[in-house]
Length: 447
Image 1: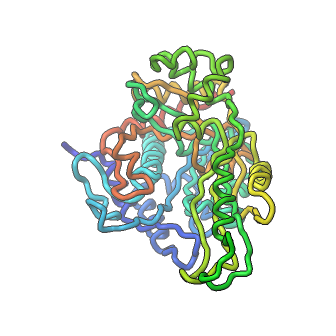
Image 2 (image 1 turned 180 degrees about the vertical axis):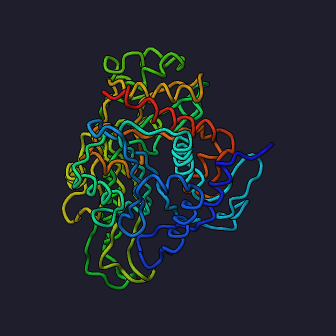
Image 3 (image 1 turned 45 degrees about the vertical axis):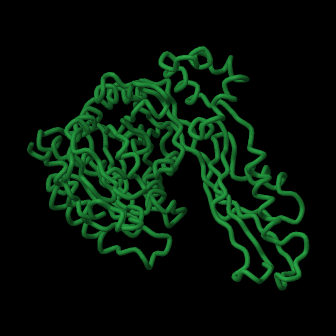
């Protein structure tokens, strides 16, 4: 079977080792610049018709000028950077090989998210070749540091938003990664589910720290700094923040209700059944994360040597903050649980995003396009557990949605941020059509 030309273009992008790092000295920006040059070669019409601006060190912002400046433009986005490959010996194919094998394209960034760059730019290139001129402006943004959750003037996405804001641009829609079509078995049903992210949780790293006099381990007190900070971390785990039913979670549960067997009576009217429903949702990690701010103790540090009592001990808790909570309210909850003698402070983080509207013709339009990709899929709004660059654009757009027009099977889902990242070679033509239809019909569905 002949390989889709979009897949072959993506293969070239995968071979660029655009690994991001919090340590700027470890980033090989030449690999990003190499990817920029490949895009110029792959998409000559885009680089003739659209204007291109480098944002920050290596992010790209493209602008396709439309005919009517009174219509709010839209923005498609993805990111060029990828996470480190981990243990390369565990990869079945080289992490930057772009190998085509067993029906997949292999390599870091295939699913997260260079695939979106290829299908979005293919859509624009085809539209230009067909003589299309958009009624409104169109923007494409591809960030260089999404994976390190860069903030402020280090974030390409934030800088791009500020640049557009300075130009007086208000966007009608932003479309980014964060949802896809997945197997319904993840939620206990047989049908596939197309999840469209309308909000995302915040993320904050909270450090707990205890100080002690230290000394020799042969003559310890009843507790050490490390044991006390460990008890504090356990206290946080054992006293979670309150549960709360968000509108998009309620909508998702109602959409799935007819297919949930014995749980159907609980899901038909989540607001009414909430006193019982939340107890069932708390039993599984995935559904529990949809209804509360979660805590995960991820790092610990004590003494540098086994026979030395630590003078200082610390743990770090990664908190995923539910919309409606904040970094400060999360920190306050933790301080109330850890007790005296334990310092708690925020190391870094961001608040949850606003919630984009779902009662609009624009959202219904995106749902209909997702439905066309897989007609038997259940389409539903979704709370994104992780973070995306799209949240940076809320100051200039209230309609920020997260959806990749692909079916992500178990192998693809398992490889994101892990070894053997890959994406099925089928579905690329349909993904290109998704974006072309969006561009052609956007104005008529803009509220």
